[in-house]
Length: 75
Image (cartoon, one colour):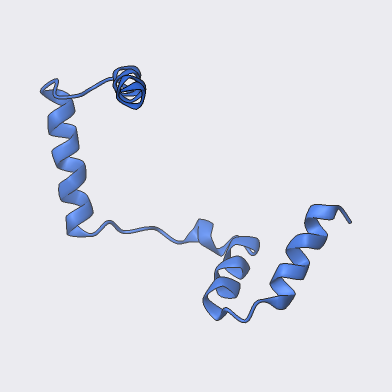
């Protein structure tokens, strides 16, 4: 067994968090692949708004944001 596996096993064994253990169990048993995530109305609205902004050209390139942040940090 690898060191990472041992660390994970130790953490799981020490955990009393039912929600975390349930989540880990679902991940490890691939149950999460079978579930379909359903977006809330709020999430759907945000996605629609983002798509509309993108289609109308209201976007800023990631490189521009990084450059502005670096300039701001140098001030």
